[in-house]
Image (cartoon, rainbow, N blue to C red; front, side, top):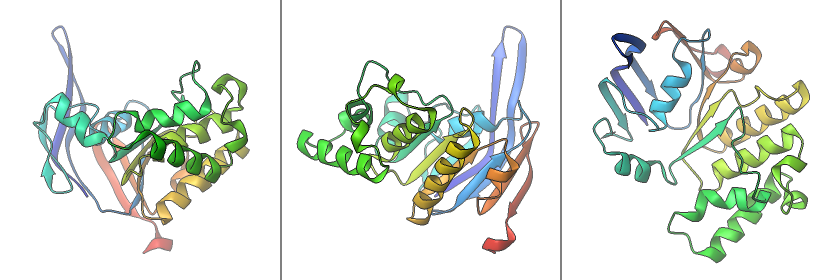
Length: 228
């Protein structure tokens, strides 16, 4: 599904150039559950942004489902993301002026799905995540765990094949964090490819494979024994 060849990302500020990712080679098959780990500043979030087509590499090749997306325009990348890639962020990124229902429907607003089908899909996803009774609430009226479940509902509303999660439990207590991790595992077991950035060894251990970064390079790429 994902194939990176010598992928690099450099940032320039004036005369200073910083290498965030350095010649990454990585292959992720459809249906995998991959945890990306490493210390702060090692390139984890940069890598996730490139995988999600939110940014473009400075060098190398990124193939998504066999298609080279490296030189696509911003408009083409946006079209590729739509309906194919879902995002879950640590900070939830919900729109507080909108209801829970409308926040989830945002994921479908700019696609080809008719309004009636959109509303049916939103109701279905909210029911699955135990949020139907909160559909009319605003995000500020919810607990942190509920807000992250709304964010996951929005991420999966368009049935993406690839789900990218950046520290999805970072703002949650342990109980709500475990609840979110269980939900992500369920989605993966149903066939969604899941790539998750995490600082937590406990949460990384729930994945079938761990990729550890250090200084913008892959230090370790290991499948866990229970999945071998």
